[in-house]
Image (cartoon, rainbow, N blue to C red; front, side):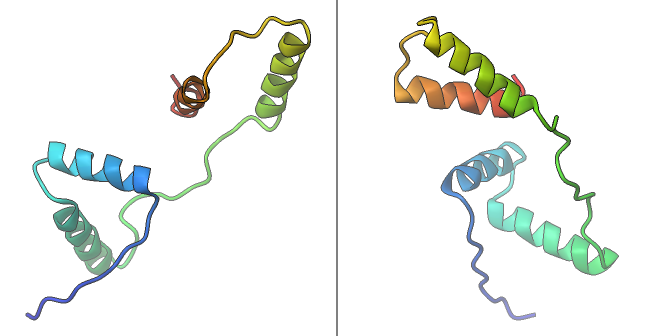
Length: 95
């Protein structure tokens, strides 16, 4: 069967993580995408459940209010933009 190319656009950080995990699994990202495509065709469905993340409706707002109060009281540590972004990444990862 003839081979064809397919281009997939994704966030650079997602691609980096995906490539790294595929490598950990002992395969290339291309191989992983082929496995996914074959599973979709064979099952005639996406081979995993897709659902919206479960979030607290007001969790983000409560955190914002807490930080705002800390800032008004001068209780926030001095953080670089890099440190702030790392805190955000850890929070989003649930750690």
